[in-house]
Length: 218
Image 1: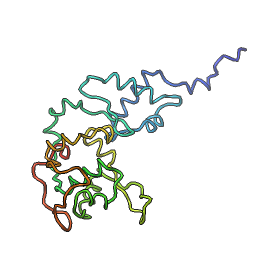
Image 2: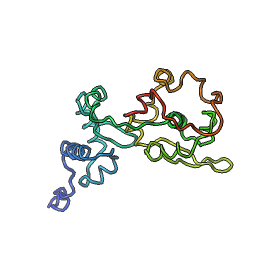
Image 3: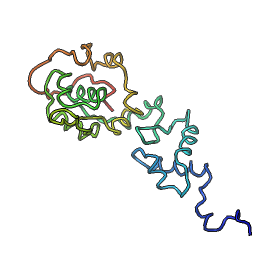
Image 4: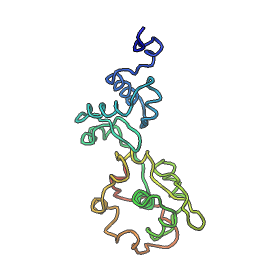
């Protein structure tokens, strides 16, 4: 008997065709409310499947469609095409006001991560209240990062995958530039970070910011 003949036991572990693997990934992404990593996908799929290769084919198949397969950090999700977002505006609008302090703090963390509270205060020119940080942590837009190897080992803050997903970003490098931020009213033509003049003493003001940028609104 030839050794090349495949036994029934071996055939049980044969990976499904690539087209079927694409369908499996499509089904998981469609049903999942949160982005899914390749490792999670491969753990659900039959033995021998190649989630990474199937994802490449699936993303290509969805190019130019109303729904696209987007990368969010190290995970993937099905999302409405960016140019069609206006069609869903009524269904997705949720009033969630952030104070000017929270907007500025979030922007500093996004652009300077990993950053400590002291560094945020140095850039803003005022103390950062615990309430401001707690609000951003509650929204799950920021999280604690690694401690810095400096005296006191201060904790750092970084933006989360939830933040990237909320604003349709693949990673923090996709954030808008200074020109876009100034036109949105976030920077108000202030000097570059690090050279901002002090705008007051004490802690953050609790008032909600007016005319918030679309970057920090639903």
